View 1 (spheres, rainbow, N blue to C red):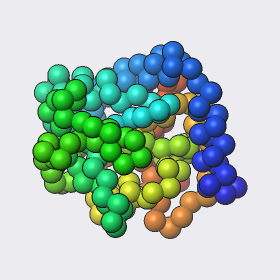
View 2: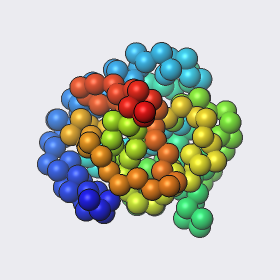
View 3: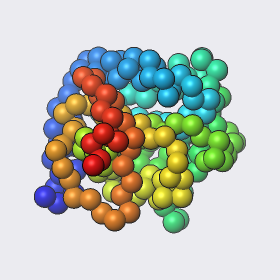
View 4: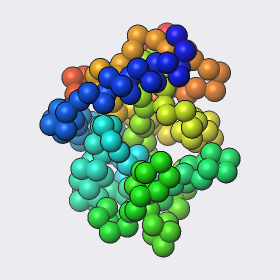
Length: 193
């Protein structure tokens, strides 16, 4: 099956979730994440800022800041499709709508974090496989970021309905280490034989 077709179908399916379902499922995912040893130990987290009907990361980011963790959020640089990681201190004050209508740091609050400092990345995606491969939104930002930073621990966050048995895999696709859904935690390393 074609990635574009799979992406379109999954986005249509996900858009049928109600706000209440998204909130309830997102809370379960957040609770699982917060109990995860890797997350507890992490001092610096890099998280996507959710929009629309994605797993809600706003509360994860706010709670991580309250726990005293350093939190980096993405700044997309369309030239070269690069991701810059910017440290966030105040979720409510420092963000504005950026590219693709996704919240991003206001220019005066961009504080670059070197990828080597990051312990854990919370990775968005439209479709994930149990082996950790994903179909994103098609920009390739995260794959480019991971190709230069292979050792960072990657946690995919998605709803259980977004797990597919398989997807087309390209040479440069880099799998996540684990996936957290509202129903389960999938250790992707056990799926990669």
